[in-house]
Image (cartoon, helix red, strand yellow):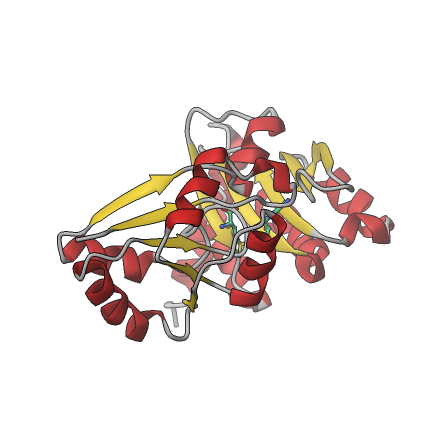
Length: 248
Ligand code: SAM
């Protein structure tokens, strides 16, 4: 049987594609890609051309069975996403699970991930952290999610896109309080890379006041709740709100 290589690709700077990633991609019988056009361009930049198979959230379940058959017949496949590490807020989980269940070797070619890149420059506790990915798009669900994290002592890491960054910072001020230290990491490894730190209130004001700071891709990192009165109060409020919904 073949091997499924899970290959990390750059989150901006193409120089971050590792030599081993290039070698594995160049040798793969086919590359499973979230967006085949995007990956074809990446390969072309390095002078590579390989057969591509589209694998995205809408066809992953159906494609996985076919791809596992190809692996069983001896082909070697690579899995990439548009940027960073597959399966981290990106497709691939179903394929990897199906391959492992079929006894196929699944091997990582590690490399960039916005999560780790942001954590590595944030200067917030990183011995323990909770990766929260994207918040729910709807305001109510987002508020609830954030409130459920208000007393979490581990550092919190969120992914965010340009059109929601101000709303999300606003919602974080509401759920975690204005004084919680945080970092907004934008466009990492790209031309307009910016890493801002401050309290949530300061960050919300800086980002809201400057349209340029709202462009691009973001990782928001928030210090965990201290074991202080504020955190206990926030947790008390959360429980009170959750319970009061069930009271007459
Ligand atoms: N699999 C990717 C990874 O390992 O980082 C994440 C894919 S997720 C669909 C895309 C999100 O990752 C963006 O909305 C942003 O939150 C974050 N992201 C990706 N590239 C980034 C960059 N260069 N700077 C900051 N955040 C980035």
